[in-house]
Length: 291
Image: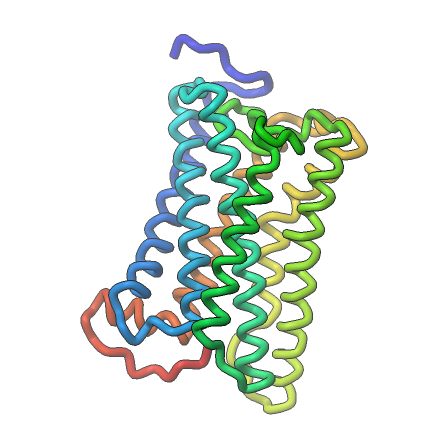
């Protein structure tokens, strides 16, 4: 290709990771786009609860695009967009991640109210929450940009994507990372755990188990947990204690989250999959809404 390979990677490694990023980005883009289009095109799909899932689809589409850009850079063997492009790529990726995790938590909160308090969501509440999520995600994702300087964007080990630079573990990085970990992992996990724990208790009481209440939390932890652990480790130790391949594998794993989200919250969600079926086949779904 004419460019030196990143330290710790062979040509095979570059091709392997490129294929993974391309596959997960393309498949996730397809699944989330189908789900989002069903909300737009099917009138019966458009309700306040499904609007949360629609916004989750949009956030995950942005993350899929981020993965496809990384896949392209992997095949070119050089980052083609310059320093400004690196900052924009990092900003877009963080915005997508923060919004996606927040919407996952809101969906669990909505499910709790639907099943345990028998309260349905109103458009005013749903719309306000979605606006707040996007504004907050953009705000927190913008802070590492050079204009603000709370943290910094840098390249991932393969030089094919940009993220929060965990190799510069100064006070700006540590304070920013600990703050967003609290806001975008600990608090969402607390909301999810309390919501699904209450839903499970309701299912157990009524002996009607509508869905597995453990899987959503497990998927969030399995996809994002290892990468967050690496970032937290970098607050106190040298992240280069881990090999470049392992440090590259963790963000690749994290970017599979849109696939799991599409399956969990759209294609196996009784309140949403009926609209997808109607859009694809033209047949009206007879399934009752069960959120």
